[in-house]
Amino acid sequence: MIFFFTWFYIPYFGQSVLWLSGSGNYLWMSIIYLGFILFNLQDNRFNMSNSIIAIILGFLAGATNENSGPAAVLIVLLFMLKRFIQDRKISLVSVIGVIFSGIGFILMVMSPGSQKRAAVHQTWETIQNNFTGIYKLTFGKWVWIYLLIAMLLIVAILIKRITKDTFWSVVIFLIGHLAAVYSMAFSPEYPERTFFGGVIFLGITLFILLYTILDDVKVPLVISAVLGIVFLFSFWPAYQDINLSYHQMQVQYHIIYKAERTKEKHAVIPLMTMQKSKYNANYGVIALDTPPQALMNQWEAKFFGVNQISGYRVNKSATVWLK
Image 1 (cartoon, helix red, strand yellow):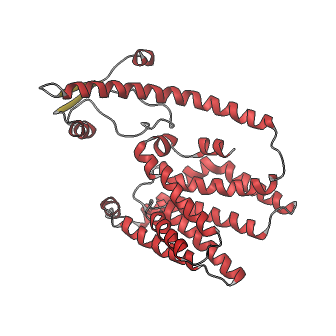
Image 2 (cartoon, rainbow, N blue to C red; image 1 turned 180 degrees about the vertical axis):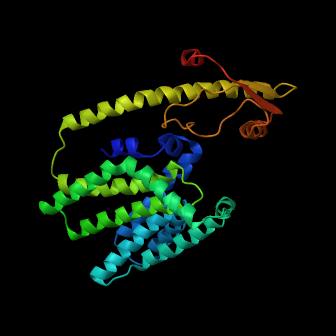
Image 3 (cartoon, rainbow, N blue to C red; image 1 turned 180 degrees about the horizontal axis):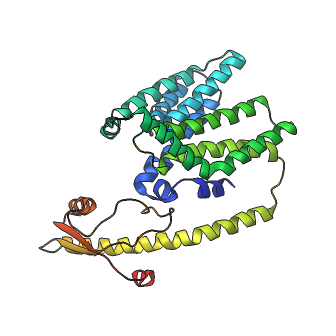
C-alpha cells in the first residue's frame, strides 16, 4: 500500500524519482531528512557517537532543499516540544542536531542558486497569489487523502484505538506536510516536484492511522490484487512513453558521438517527440531544439565537445523510432 501511495501521489514521478538531477534533489535527500526525524524520535543518550551522528544528520538535513529539510526540522522541534510538555525533558542530542541543521540551511541559502532566487522581488500580492495557486493545485490532488485521514482519525477515536502519543504524531506530521508545501509560496516559483517531501509527510500521517487501526487485521488478498491491477493500468502507458524517450535519446547520443569524431563536429539530430506521461523524466523539462543557438543545443554542444548541434522534427510513429 505504501508503494501504491508513492506511485500515484508523488508529484511528477519522472522528475523527482527517475530524472538523475531530480532524484538527487528529492528522492535521495528524503533518506537524509527522514533519517534525521527517525534518529530524533529515539531516546538517544548524550554521548560522543550520538552527538557526531546528530551533527552530520542535522547539517545534511538542513542543507537538503529549501522546503522539505526545514519542514523535517520543524517536525523534530515539535516532537521536542511535546516531550518537554509531557516529561519536562529536553534531549541534548536533538538540540545539537537542530543547531547544525540551522547551519546547513544557512549554507544552502548562501549558494548561488538560492541567492539568485532570493533576489527576485516578491510582493505581498505575489505571495498571496502563490498561496492561492498552491491551494488549488494541492487540494485538487490530495482532497481524498485529507478526507481519508479525517475519517480514519474519527474512527480511531471512536473505537479507542488511538493513544495520545499517536494523535500528536498525526498532528505533527500533518503540520510538517503543510509547512513543506505552503512554504513554497514565498518562492518565485513552485514546480510540483518540490512538493515531494510534503507528500511523503502526508503519507506518513496516513499510514500512522492505518497501522493504528489495522495493526492486527490481515488485509484481504483481493485488495492487494485490485490495487496491483490498477497500478499495471497506470504503469504500462508510462513504461511505453519512457521507453520511447529512451530510444530517441540513444539515437541522439549516437549521432552526437559520431559527429564528435568528424572534422566539422556538427551534429544534426532528430528531435524527441512530445512526452505524454508525468512518469517520464523528460516530461516538462527543457530539451534540444531546431536552431543551434537554442539554450540546450549550446549547452550539450559544449558538454559533448562538438561545435554545433541542430535539430529537425520527425513525423514518424513511435514504432519507427523503436526500430
